[in-house]
Amino acid sequence: MVSPLVRFGTSTWTYEGWKGQVYLKDYPKGTFTKHCLTEYWQFLRNGSPLFRTVGNDSTFYRPPTSQQLRAYRDQMPEHREMCFKVWEDITVPVFAQHPRYGVKAGKPNPRFLDAQLLIDLVLAPFREAQFQDGTGPFLFEFQRHDLSVGEFTSRLDTFFGQLPTEFKYAVEIRNAGLLGPEYRKVLEAHGVAHVYNHWSYMPALAEQHKRMQGTFTAPFTVLRLLTPLKMSYADAKKRAAPYTKIVSELPEMRRDTVALIQQSTSQAKPTYVLVNNRSEGNAPKTIQALVEML
Image 1 (cartoon, rainbow, N blue to C red):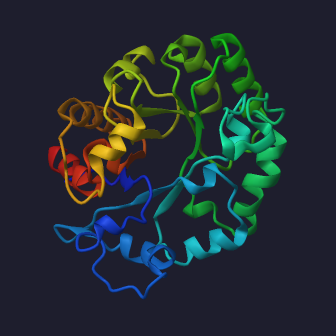
Image 2 (spheres, helix red, strand yellow):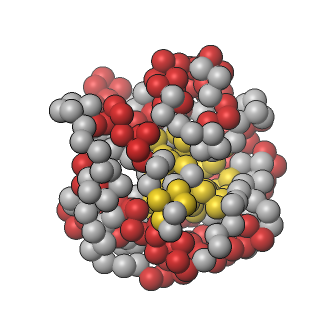
């Protein structure tokens, strides 16, 4: 029996490749992505709902409106939570040389870790929609950057010191060199979780935990199983599409995930495990395999 503290979910939910597996209903053309969230929560394993959380990646590109949040809430049962990525205008120190940034490409971001911007444009719609109970940890995804450990942790410390405490926050880094005592100390001081991310160029999950001194920094724990280690996002996507089946198991990832879940739940911490199709090819099947290991 899996602990009720464990909240498994997928990185997002709108995959046509899951039709016939997670999604059995016929959706009129053009309505699938808008309405399939209701059916997502109904997916059963041995008679019980498998998913108790879900990720929302779209909010990395723009904050959700209160209207969007109400539409999500209308498709969510009680005691289910959505984990939202935080708008990248808050987490990018310098905009990459990418066409989607337009005139901002290559320039420093004056709004990096701007707490008031987060409060006004990101958190306000959640209050307006009264979505607090349906919100899991906010995921601050920091792409690889050139900030020193000292500067990054100092900026984080100031930022989280200014945020309201009614929400849960989690930090996902892509610079392995940041893992260590200074980073850990700042997260712990503010009750913010480190996101254990199984991602291309980060250390294995067990190694991340070792560098975090084998302890958790928040009253809850977050894992995101994203891509195989030492494999680019593009290669992982090519390998996994169209996401209908497991293309290759990642035994170390599974073992490390189970060990972290067991340690976290033994300390009575809610544990969010978000799985991406690009890790093994099919996120629902990866989750079912993890459940069988617990």
